Length: 275
View 1 (cartoon, rainbow, N blue to C red):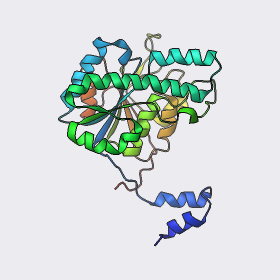
View 2 (view 1 turned 45 degrees about the vertical axis):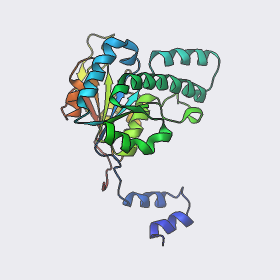
View 3 (view 1 turned 90 degrees about the vertical axis):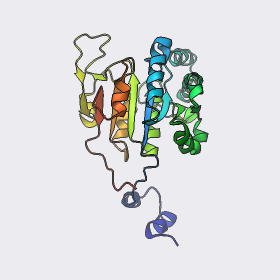
């Protein structure tokens, strides 16, 4: 027996704005509310090699008894190289996304091998139904951060670079599963008014709303702009946090709920009833 909403969905147009609003009345199910999604930067962490990666791995392992984690990997410099070649050859955005996904996959594979002795597995999106089992048994699981759009990636408003990359993919995982936290481990202490590597006068921003950040329209951001836009309609993730993965203890502090680095929050999130 269909509910009233079910009957309207079965017989009405899914483009009807009134029907779309009616679907807001149902609760949001947080599937994995105890898991933390941790995005490990490609260029900022993985590309730096042993000196950056191994201390962060040690910190992740130390947190396994206390925090469940989905570890997503960025693509980094190798993706930028392949983007430059593909753009020079006239490849469409969807093809660039396929190529970038391959690099993020390579980083995830390397992370898996480094964590293999702890039983941490790498899962492709097709294996996500097994996430709860791996998380409960081993405390963490690894995925590559690119969203699975590949050839179906939308064209950006400006230029040819895929707009939804590994920052976005990890955010979408956190949002869909109703994660406890979305943490980005990069090579800076969070968000600044400008690139601190290039501008010594850049000021650190410890906390800011996504609405205010979009209004400021900074030229340099610590996260893909697509993530900020997705936050405006998020149902589960009300804030994201950025820590310096090169500084031991910052990831642990963020997992423990401390306001280290930078927190970007949605001042107008529509959470509804979470079950």
